[in-house]
Amino acid sequence: MNEFERKIRDLPWHQPPDALKSRIFGQRRPPARIGLFFDRRIAMRWAAVLALATGLLGYVIGQWGQARAVESVEIQGADVDLQMVETGTGQNFFDLSDAPGDILPGDLAVAVAVGKEQF
Amino acid sequence: MSDVRLELEQVYDRHQHQFFACALSMVGNKELAEDVVHDVFCRSLRLTELPQNLKAYLFRGIRNAAVDVLRRQSRVKEVCCDDLFTGLAQPTEPDEDESYQFRLAQALTWLNDDQREVIMQHLVGGLTFREIAELQDVALGTLTARYHRGIKKLKQYMGKSDE
Image 1 (cartoon, rainbow over the protein chains, first blue to last red):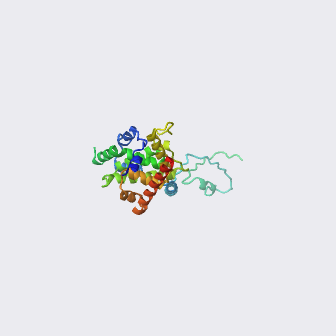
Image 2 (cartoon, each protein chain N blue to C red):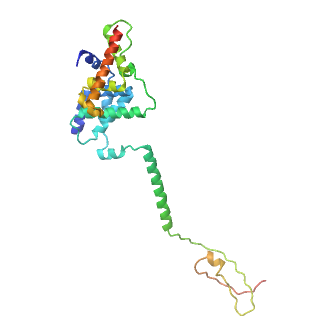
Image 3 (cartoon, rainbow over the protein chains, first blue to last red):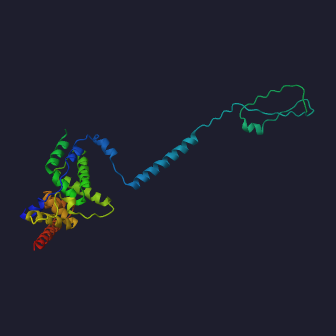
């Protein structure tokens, strides 16, 4: 190193602050494996792709789970109006197999009280 | 205290001024230079085994981190004397030493980035040309030519300004 080079070397460069050493060595960092996992940096576009893929996967899983779920509906009670029509025969029929049958699954108990009909 | 931590701390104590000056000469800002050095040492603390030439390894890390910082900055910053040096004001009285140092510092900021970088790493960082060529990933001949062109420019400027 000649005189000229020495003068360049000895220029009054800014010094690192004392706090820098404590910033580096003073703090305990998490163990290497955990630190490496959480400190990993990825590009924004990959982060966006990852977020989108996670969202889609969640949606697909949700749809699949919903399709597999057993729906059970319990009807507490229902009022059914019956209209009695006198046919003139010995027996009267109450046909409930169509419309009421669609909305009231299962057996339907019907009690008919014989009294005085009013028309 | 682990060996890695101990060794890094020793290297930091011995060469902190060189690491900081080299980072500073690249990013041209004290706070950014601090961040660069901090980042490189914190990453190195996670290593389980340190490389043989630790000093050169750290200089390479500092260079890469500084390049990342410059890439993230949207505008190119002109480096000036105040950014790099402390207590260098334009001399008002004809003090020969002070004036020479000021002009030399100013001339250094006028070099192109590649020339300033190799001069810094060689003269301030104390790295050999071979080490610098490896860490910058350029041919040794290219690197030495760059260095000598930089030194020649500085001498020309100092010679002219003496006239």
